[in-house]
Image (cartoon, rainbow, N blue to C red):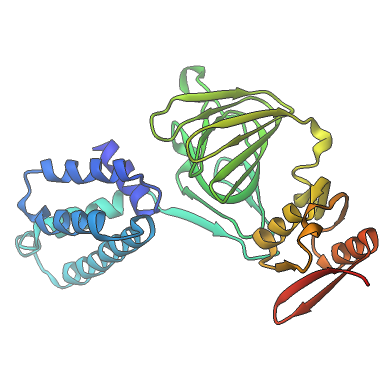
Length: 323
């Protein structure tokens, strides 16, 4: 039952893999309650017929359960005895009870250009970068394993916790590509466009495949690891001078990065579109820093550094060489 509840929780939050959805379906299928038939049929239809089941299916299922829960509340308020209450559809009762027993998910999102500082229920601190989303259960501090789900970019300062029998309580940060298992640790995670990058400042981190829990690599401080959708990974020694997490101090720091890479950062974090009139401009590299909350300073710096002109027309910034 506990595993099924965990699957349902992940499903409602939109983080179940296709395999986990099938596991949930099989669990419900094995139930002897005939009232599950409609739920099973709806879940199977969603799994097989929705082009983007991670978002569409979870949304429909969530709305269905919330609707049933509200209906159950209304009907319970009008009944006068348990005999009438027991006449309610068994499946509805089970679903409503199951929903009430589940810890509630807490979700925080940032807009373009916005950075948030969050304190999790276990006192860990998370700096959430622009255009990012983090989800966790409100009983995070009580669990044997603290789990959070991230898309976008965040910096974690994880509080070390001791459980019973002196066993440390680990935290697992889930991204689409990799599970990041930590104890008391400080690290930066960026999950964009099918690639997750982890940069470790303090402590130790183990990276595992979300598909089979196979360990990919154990990280040491000063290392950066990139993991793609096939769980292929690249380890690099970078040191703290890389300033990967300078964004949380309101600073954009670039270390010999091409204007094409800078363009992608502006798309990810600010929703800005750049168009290079001359394709050779993309290969120019820049090292330096500018305020994160004033992109005009970056544009002015780039213009002066490379004799460029950056002009905004119709929401798109055109980048061209000065005549």
